[in-house]
Image: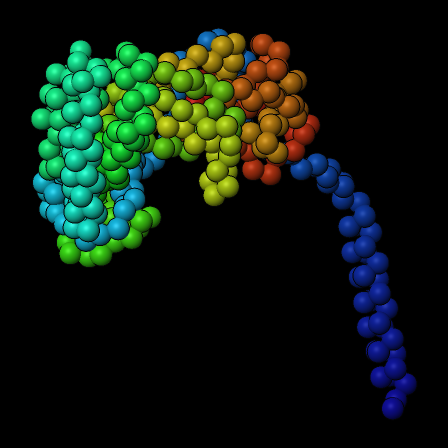
Amino acid sequence: MSKKFYRIFLAVLVFLGLGIVLLLTLESLKPEKTKQKPQKATRYVNAEKIVYKDYDAEIIASGRVMAIEQVNLSSEVQGKVFTGDVPLKKGAAFRKGQVLARIINEEVTYNLKSQKSRFLMSLANVLADLKLDFPDAYDEWQNFFNAVNVDDDLPALPEINNKQLKIFLSSRNVLGDYYSIKSFEERVDKHTIIAPFSGNFTQVNMQEGSVINPGAVIGTIINTSTYEVEVPVEKNEVKWLKKGQAVNVVPEERTADTLVGTIVRIAQFKDPQTQSIPVYVKIPSKAGQVYEGDYYSCLFKDIKVKNSMELPRSAVFNHNEIFLVQNSRLKKAAVNIVKINEKTLFFNGLKEGEFIVNEALLNANENMQVKIIDQAEKKQR
């Protein structure tokens, strides 16, 4: 290459270098921009001043209706089962005093009649001696003899005030035979099962004509005149309830009238399935309205919660902690929970006049800077 080419190349390099130096110099002469620190956005929270007062609260719990009286009809004798005054069928209704079932054993019946016949024979032999030795008692015992009927229960014995007469009757085994027959009559009476109350058959295990043995269950009956509702109540809520307290009982389907019940029992144990305390509410029966198995809601009212404040449950975390607003910053504090409702709770234990956050705060922490939303700001937002 020629010397002229090298001179041109060097001249270009010199001009480029001078241009770069000039640009760097001009750039350095520009004023530096002030770096602004990023501003943190102020967080707004709902809060209210702590003021304690007395409240009227309530407890709501639901449970199933049960019959207060439920009886298994067990046979104490052996024989064949026959229908009484009502059909021996599930769902059959009966009244108190009606015959629910008869257990017939002809052998037992004939045996009782045989004993009564022998007793009449013994009395006939005794009457002749009574007429001679105890004439004052003869007429009374003659009337007793005439009243004895092998098809009926024995009448009551004549009153025995004479000691010698008592010894005489005992020696002839009259008293022993009498009480033996009365005992047998008691056994025979067990062949007839009488309704102890008005109600319904809820279960029938034996059909008419079945042979039954002692101890076997004929069926199950319930008393339909009174019912009770078993409702689970949280352990910390039971303290607000007491026996005899009135309760509004409302059917869950809301198609029937509200009933007024009464607390009759509060269990002293915890149900292992619900982990709650069973409370039993007695309710009146209304024909065609209350049935065993219905579900009712029990509203326990007239509960006085004193010297406390109500707060949404969502504002409480870690069981009993809340946020206070102090000097525009959040501060954690623990409260004393007095009563828990479905969506709110009552508390105390903090100083009145403090501002407590009454909403759930996400991603909040202690000492976070906040501003309380007042009512005017709420309307504008």
